[in-house]
Length: 446
Image 1: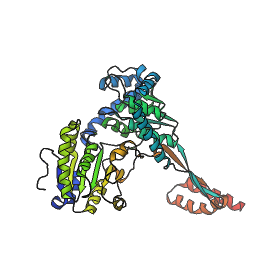
Image 2: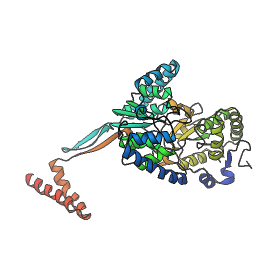
Image 3: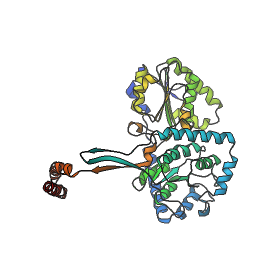
Image 4: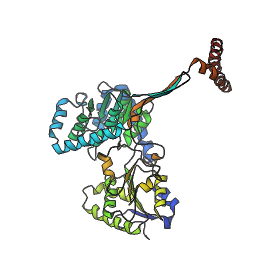
């Protein structure tokens, strides 16, 4: 392990035995997006948001023509029924069946997440919580490098299970204003109310404020690139947002039982999302590390997505040799990856130790790609270490919770004095008076 690069492949090879754990933590730490790039983008996004807020559809069309679809028009922003029907007819039966299977599996998983309203009674008092679905949700579906019907399902299904009444999709079209048929079919399968052919920061602003064509929503969800992410961050408070997900990432934790070709493909599967994707192997097996490196080079030579894979592996990939499995888990916990693949003989031995991860995949047979499509959980997950304090998209993200407080006359009388003293300590005299007047009145009634 003398070299930190594998030569032609260009991926970093690191060792805790040589470099120490602290060095590796610093080297592998990441942010959602480069802070300098974020600052530059923010100024442009503020202008876009202001334009859409002030001029609605006219601004949407103007910005879309500038940055995306040159032939954009107000009349064509919304995908019509004829195009939806044509998309449905164009999709092969086997693909349609796979989409239905994915939808059904996602539904079954997310139904287990449904929270239940509850209350308890104590001497005539009531305490509890009630849950209600959000009314309207906007779904951002990325375009560009690939078509993502899976994102439609992975956002819309938990929203539908939660009971959301209205769902709207925004997605960037191609240069001719077309949206991939699979995206339209997925939208149809989950009962989306409308699809709009517009993307970028301007589509986020449109959902946040509403335009003449695009309805204002209560929450926006779905992964995206830097411009929509910055727009979501700036508009938080005007509209609800799910996460601020950055580039895709995977940490593979493997022992000597993992097939090295499988490990290599696990890394490549996430790296192919784009040049900013993160793919890291942690293993105490030097043999596995070396064989994985060989397989990475072999697969890379024949990959059609090599132009995305090479920069991802070179700039954001690593093969890390650890002293043992406990050290590998400790590093993964510290760095809190979006996906963690436990490619080990007994994965359940480590689940309790692995505290911070967007999603955990158990055993070499369970590739992260199952989770990207049809395993069950949503693939909208926290990235860039944010799994240390946030979780993947779920049913509860599409619900609001209200607390219930109802005190009996006796309980109100008994608690009023203590509450009034706390109000006094904070200098809130009206609070204290509201409490004491009840204690005085209820005391006379008792």
